[in-house]
Length: 196
Image (cartoon, rainbow, N blue to C red; front, side, top):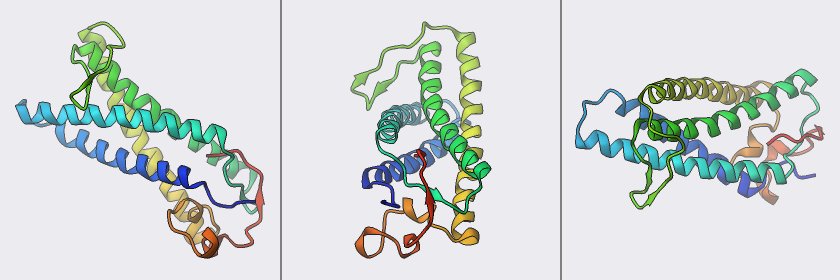
């Protein structure tokens, strides 16, 4: 049994992770800027990044649904495995909901999303200022919820690596040892699992 994620899953994981960090940082930076051509440009970039991430996350989820994840270590309790599964599905849900809420917000506020300044995306709902304000609040709450979930995700991975000393973290790292596996992956007892 392979104890590493596929190269495609690893590539998509880190590409999406980098995209999320950049998009969140840009959104946090631009929200309090005074209205100016530069702020409007940054908003456009933020929307382009969000639309791109939505596509990547759909691809990542499709890959996850069609490729079995590596099994979890036998040392994990049933509750820990359940928490890991729930945490991953929460991340997927938030990663889909956030760009969709941003797209809906733009539609409601009457600002079309033009992907990379070339491809106009359709408005998902009619213009509605009150709904746009609610969607803006939802977009912010979802982003901060994702931030908390990501901190928990990273913390759990680091706990597995430094405290439990199993292969949960290393199996998602881009680099591996001889034969395509990290040395930490050798002889790890596992349970069959369908996680991402």
